[in-house]
Length: 158
Image (cartoon, rainbow, N blue to C red; front, side, top):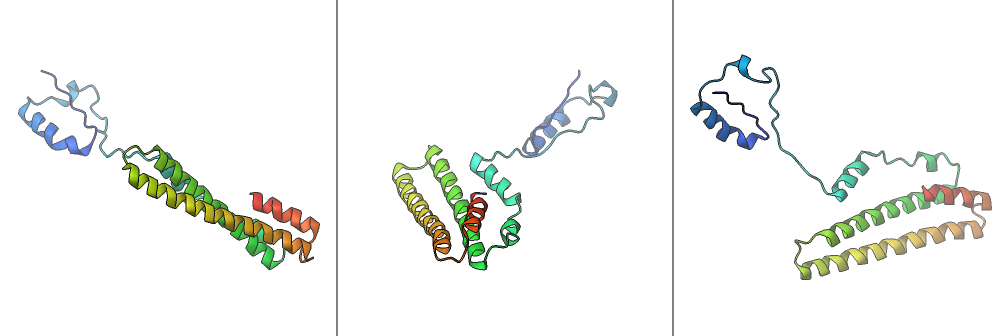
C-alpha cells in the first residue's frame, strides 16, 4: 500500500498526522519526492486597496526635488501641502471604491460611511484648491516669477 501526504497549511497537520499514524509506514524510497519540502503556512489575500496601501508605504516620502528647486520657502511649503493633499484624496477615493465594492456592509451603514468619505474628499479638494490658489497669489504679488510658477506647477503635478 502506497500512501503519500501533502500538507497545504498548518491547520491540516493534526488531522493528516493522525491519518498517517493509522496507516502503514511508507519507506522513504517509495515516495515520489523523498527530499521535497512539505509546504506549510497560511495564505493571505489582500484587497486592491490593501495592496496599493502596502506599495505606497514602501515608497520613500521624498520632497527632495521641491527642496532643491531653489523656490522660496513659502512656495516649497505650499508644494509639499499640495502633494500631501493629493495623496490623502487618493487614499479616500480608494476607501470609497472599496466601500462601494463591499456587498457585506449593511445599506444604512454603507450610506453613512459613504457620506463621511464624500465629505472628507470634498474638504481635501477644497484645501487643494486653496493651496493651488496660493501659488497663483504668490506669482501675482511678485513673490515668485512666472518661470518659478511654471516650475512650481510642474513639481505640484508629480
